[in-house]
Image 1 (cartoon, one colour):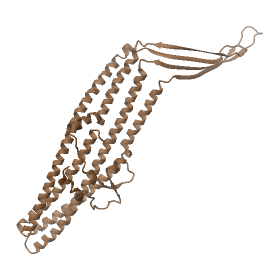
Image 2: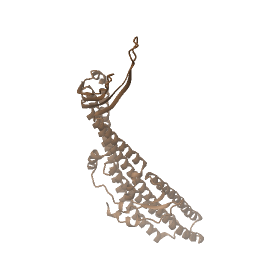
Image 3: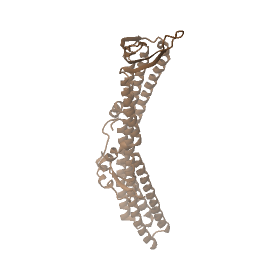
Image 4: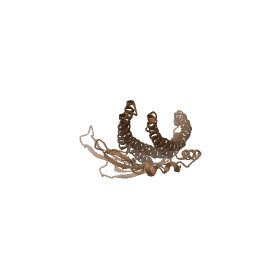
Length: 430
């Protein structure tokens, strides 16, 4: 970072004496580390975190489906026999019952369970990547808001100082007007300019209040504060990597790109899962039971069971899954195209942010040069020609140029930091 504009940070970007928080809001000083610690309170982050937990539970559920199925059941009924045509025979009643414990376990399903678990793992991975992307996007948003508040506070400070200066000059112009050295239009022009600056000061204060409110909402803060940014030590962040290095890092760590890669891998596993339905399935089973199953009078019980294996092959799957397989292949092709398009969009976005960042560095140096030249011009006009009526407007214009150059410098510095963090976010550095 150029030393010509780093050094003035100590003076020009120190916390300014802004107006007290309006509407009864308490002032709260916050830096980048402070807002980063509150990102977990953002509602979008909370929702994505819940989605991640849901995906984790679904993965555990899918794994539990591989465990044996165990069932406990039974039946009971009253066996009643009434003889007909014989007076000597008696009715015979017997209560019959049977309890059974059965189990069944998949030994081989053509990989169906394995692919289902693998796909659920991808879903869980996707939920984590989506949570990471949302956290980074929210982090970037709060950084931008914090820098915008900082910029507006500096604007307000410049305007406030300009108003004080203009009011002093108005008194001097008024004396010149009373002595007949300047026209009344010059006096009115000076007063009108002060009025415009006062209007701008109110507008900027409202912007600060709105941005503070937006930042508090974004961070999920229950109380609303007038935010006072602490960014003096964070305005020197600079991009040291080349564009090629940034793009190579983005190809590996960009949250959006990682999500699309995971989605494509999930669709490929889905194709294997569909094909597994047309493979043989092997199951082991065991049934054991106890009960009274015959209408005897000695109340003997029976204990027994069976154990074995079942092999099945679905012939209908050979033709029922044909269209589903084709559809799944189309989904894979679609995801590959989306992934390629995302890589191209990512490259364009990284290039745009990198170019804008380099442009902001040039604007910083140019603004510093304009500040120096406008200050020198104003000093010459004040010392040499202020009392000459013809050049009074030139003096005012020179002061205006100095303030505008200061605005441009603050704008360029803040823009450089916003582009810096945007590059870090899109390339996966955050």
